Every structure is written in C-alpha cells, then in structure tokens.
Length: 66
Image (cartoon, rainbow, N blue to C red; front, top):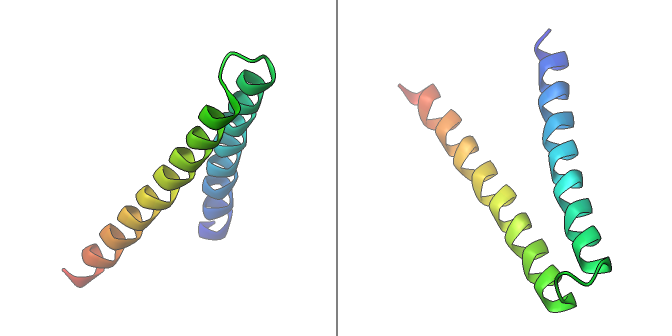
C-alpha cells in the first residue's frame, strides 16, 4: 500500500504542475501576458516546487530523528 500512496502523491504533484504550466502557456498564447512574463512565471513555479520539496524532505528527515 505505501508504494501505491507514493505513486498517487507523485501523480497529483505532476498533474498540478502540468496544469499550472498549461495555464501559463495559455495566457502567453492569448497574449494576456508577455513572453518575458511567462518565462518569469515558469521560473517562479519551478522554484516553488523545488523549494517546497526540499522543505518537505527536511521535515521528514528531522521527524525521523526525534
């Protein structure tokens, strides 16, 4: 069961990332935002996912120490 749960969490994170990337592309193609703004939003989105991933990993490692 734990393998299945990890797969579901990974699929949820990947789907949410893909959905947000799709929304950014849609906004850029509709010229609601500029190309530079779209790139900035991609970088910010990637930074948030990597940053929160590191925070979650550190939290799990610290919780195992106690």
